[in-house]
Length: 298
View 1 (spheres, helix red, strand yellow):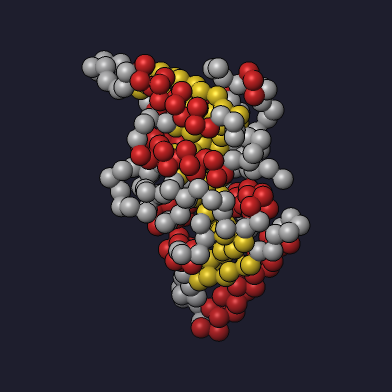
View 2 (tube, rainbow, N blue to C red):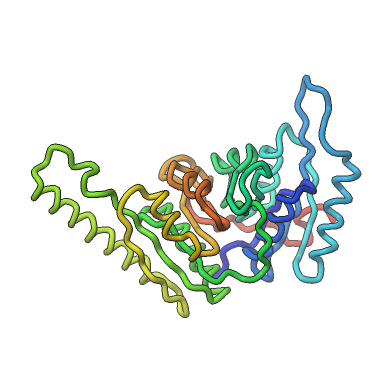
């Protein structure tokens, strides 16, 4: 059971890029291909800017040398109108399952602060997107994986990816489902009817949680957690200090195989103290890609 076979990492020499590289190694399987992507951003009608192309090549070569022997690695350089555009093109060409990025350095330590590139990829990237919190330096395998779940197809994709990582790392799994408070959505109804509707909602949520737990692979024994209130802050609070990786699905519309974050997944990102993976509609499986040897630049 494999979640991420082809992983693109955006590298620019910053501390956040180093954190992304560490996270990518934790998420990738031993037989995964790591694609080290360096983007030289350019914009027409503006003064040229960015790093020296030679220094970009050296950066990618140094990262590759550090990883070779443990992973199959390729480097891809790209000139593009923006880093997001370049990473999208590379991910599409490589049939990537995942793009991994770090947080903006101006954000608080230990928190995810997605920069412009991450936000653009979250609004239409061709595969799952993972973001590491600022200052993240963990190298070990994951110990406790969380899933923000609501029973939708999109949440099912996140659940499948979470199970794959948990089975590989022998990690614990918690599945979080949050229902609205009894006062939300039932305005004007008599109190007995509000209570009845709220009870039916809780029963339905628990049934969805139980069905999700039943899908766990052998060796994975998930716990289900039913919460009440606003989903993003409630799930974030429940995960804090417990999980070290959280999966969330994309919102339920838009093109297939695109990561389209909705208000809940974006709010979870901003509240998280651990890496977050947003999976696309349709899951993380991609069409067959070229062999590793022909995947990119030597």
